[in-house]
Structure formats: structure tokens, C-alpha cells
Image: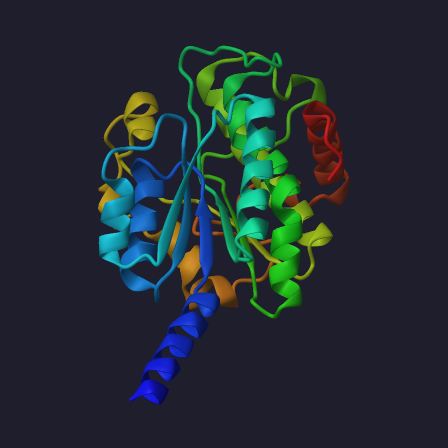
Amino acid sequence: MPSITISFVIFLMITNVNALTYMITGSTSGIGLHTVRRIASTMPSPNLIIHGRKDEPAGLIDELTDLGANSVKYFKADLSDIKSVEALGEKVVEFITSSDSHLDVLVNNAGEFDPTVKTTPQGYETTWAVNVLAPYILTSKVKTLLLESARRGRKPRLITTSSISQSYTMPPLEELGSLKDAHTAYEESKLGDRMLTVKFAELLPTVKCLCMDPGTVNTKMLLSGWGACGIPVDKADNTFKLAATEEGDKAPTGSYLYGGRGSADADDPDKVNAMWNLVETQASLPF
């Protein structure tokens, strides 16, 4: 009887060690919340790191645990503020390393469409800061965790949300991050996300780096900027598929999925490098 008990305990430990750890930004509402629910309910005992801009929503951790998550950790951060994003990344690294855990999947899901057109504490247009600078900074801060997972043979993934609404031509560099109308700011930021992914794939060759159009989904963002022209949030599985299923395994690193071909500018190394260098300068953080 004791040997059976010991074997069972060892089995549980191995199961927990092998369970994948997913971090999803913007996971308290919309597509992010739907994605963490899908991961919790369908993947084997996942560990979840979730993020929101406000205090932890009541009952969310219990809900995800009841759905099947092995563990859930919540972090609060304002992704429009560079200092807040830096602190988030540092806290995640501290949490993972102190618990002798790992990070297998980072999903840069949080997105902004700001019809009021305002600037951040660092002086950048809010949509650009949340949609482009934040993914760059967060990924820069936690990339060592993803690389360590790759070293252990865990096949890590880095997913960044772009959009079918991305600009088809990159504007002059001096305009990126400056005030402009809300739709133009959003479109430019989503081309920026696609270009980030191309560069992530180049600099992190052992990490599967992907971006995608999440679908035209009736989130609060879509309703405020375009109206109810999409599918229900609970049908929006593109993010989940790339983060947690074999579709993410099969997709070539650096690729853009589910939104057609997208902008040819993302295939131009000179334009990608120019945008990357600008973001690196704006973030004041070498990758």
C-alpha cells in the first residue's frame, strides 16, 4: 500500500512539472478571457498566468481552477505605461524562477482602440503604446524564460495579436506613436505587431513566434470602433488554436495567420528593421 501511495505522489509531481504554463495578457475580458477559459477546460492541468489592468476580478481564479487549471496567478498592470510593463515582466520572471517553474507560451493578446486619442505617461499615443510597445517590452523582459523552456525541449510559443485591419503600408517612422485619428492609430499598430513577430522569429530561433488576426469578434473594442459586425466572443478560437493546439505547432515561425496575406511591408527586411529600431528606441530597452 505505501508503494502505491508513493507512486501516486510521484505521478502527480511529474504531471505538474510537465503541465504547460501559459501567460495571456488582457485575459479578464473579451478574447483573452475566452482563451484562458478554453485552455483551462481543454488542456491537461495547465498553469495560467493572467493579466488585467484593474484589481483581480472576483471569482475568476476559482472559475479557472474549477474548469481544470492546475494553478492560476494574476498580475495587474497598465500596459499603456512603459514602467508598468517593465515591472510586470520583472514580476513574472521573479514568480517563475522563485517557484522553479517555466513559461511555455506567452500570448500578447491585450489590445487597445482609443477613440479619445490621448497620450501615455511617456508621451506616446495610447493605442501604439499598448499594442506595440507593451508586447515588445514584455517579451524582452521574459524572453529568457521562453529560451530556457526551449533549452529543456518544451517547444515554447510566442503569440502576438495582429489584425486584418493592419495598415498595408508603413507610414513615415516619425509618425509612429504620435497622435492621429483612432482608426489610423489602430491600423498602424497592428502592422507593427506583425513586424514585431517577424523580428521575434529572427532573434528567438528556438521559440515558435506567430501572429494572427483573431477574427472579427464582437468585443467591447469592436463595438466601440466598428459596431456589431462580428462573431460572438465565445466562438473566437483563433488565439486558442495557435497558443494551445497543433495548429500552432504546424505554422512556420514568423508567420501571420487567419487574416489573408496582410501587408507586404512585413516581408521587407529594411522596413521591419526600421520599425524595430524605432520601437527599441521608444521603449529605451534593447532587446
